[in-house]
Image (cartoon, rainbow, N blue to C red; front, side, top):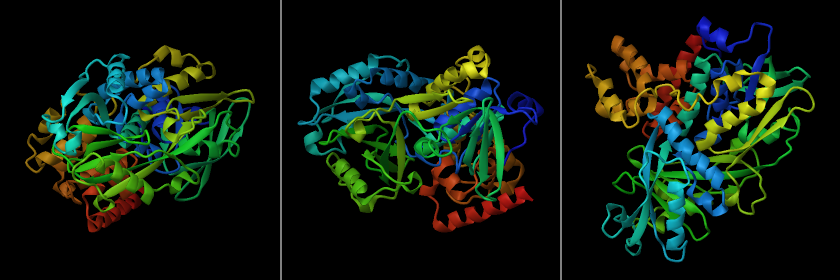
Length: 521
């Protein structure tokens, strides 16, 4: 499972043979990987285990937005919104390949929130803090503006347009994990934490390999429970009980063929007080979401329901001239958000803020992560290490907030320069089609050059499984980005599952099985 690192990386991020890690983290979602990256970059030795694939659950089931959360202003979450708006541009700066600006159209609809309330909310959204580069809100005449054309005639009156950002959520997680590994952290996927023993000077974490079922012990001075919707399952069984409570909320999305020709998004108000987004997705599609309702059961078994699909179709059909029906859905996904239970009566009103719960009274420290949102993952990691600094030593204070300026892998190029990067990738590569170069630039950034160089040297590595997915790219994903299955490649590292045929998927599965067996030999 562990990849080879240089001696410099090992000395920076690995303890000596018999010494414990400084930090062990349970959970390979955005919070766990964000903490791992920050800690490894400060010089701590870090171990992270994930029971499945990185971003295999909640962190790949978001609406793919870096946003302040316009609707959270209604619940007076001013500090959370301000923090998120600031982080929005910070993460854009360190990951310009997987983050890009979006403009959102908010049509005014009689009987919903009044015009003055929308205008006030958007004024606060622009000025509460954090917006430096993104354009400000403007009013729209939807009878004249192109954004009004797909809407029903009675909605082509007036509205607003404001800024937020898109993010490839699963790749954000993977890139944090890759950077943590490159800085010396040990990242193990398909490795489940099955037991933990606490002593005064540290933890012994028992981890089981999902393929071999072999178990091993990992020792660490500090343990972090970042298991998301499973955090409560670990607490009280493997780990001490949580003091706070989690509220599990299901959110589902549908993907349909493209509903409009421009590149802006829509935010729609609904009679039940919820909002639904309609966002351009992977060129030929529109993403519609999300739902919010309480969830019970095993988070691993979550799936969109017929009621949720019907709700999202009906919500979109209230606004678009062209109705959306369940028959239009080409793909859907669903996730369970582990929110901090603040006692809100409705799921959509539950806070998206996070709570870091430090339990250090009974021996070695345990930090549990409750709640949070993808936009503020980096700030959560900062707070987590600040909270643990007394147990970890001075390195946390010495390095400070370094993750806001150091690019994530492939992100070492200016904002807004993805098209130029795509053009440079095509230089002297007549075999690389322009659409494929554009996809590689916005997926891998400058690191696309590493596997394109391999394809330059070996024409067989240019063989595609479909939709431009080459042997060289798949090998890169397996060797450098922890991918093990076709689903890892097609639905998390890329979104090419929307384009490959069943036969092409089967060929990819067969190839990856051979590659895994070859690596194990």
